[in-house]
Image 1 (cartoon, rainbow, N blue to C red):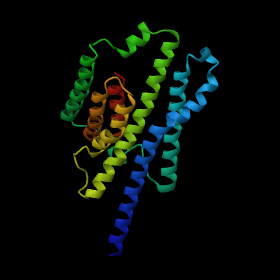
Image 2: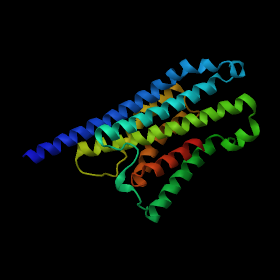
Image 3: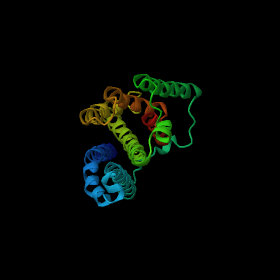
Length: 233
């Protein structure tokens, strides 16, 4: 009886800690950009104010990265919980069939986006050939903020998926709960704020990210790299 009670307490604690990670991630993504805008005017003298958006993105990226680092250290030292990796997936190789499935999903996502923009936007080509001066730096800032945002997305996928599986109590399940929750939260927020040029497409991508997390066997680094690749290309 005592062992059962202890197990339930540990389960409740894990659910609570994962929910806190998700909540902190939501707050960080929603409100950190506003904090960054307080600091970016300090660099108005660079480019005579033309790089204000660039500094917004830079400070947002720096603050997001710092928040992730602090959260990681706090959870590891205080609760002995790793929020940026799944130890059980370390060193595991994916079955070749699953690799092909993931590759197909990534290619399909990039192809769908490319079709919608008429194959006219190639990120690195655009940055290297069509943009110059201040516009180049502003677009580099957008790239940077998206790279760090993908870290938050990956961390939140892990936390939310764990919460649902712990609540249901059937162990690991191949249902992208986390992707659907992020779709209904961050996805809708992105649509409302106009964060992307193709809001409906990027809304659905959150569900795809959740599926990719499961297909990679919950490997955080692989998931992050794939999400970043889709987001940037």
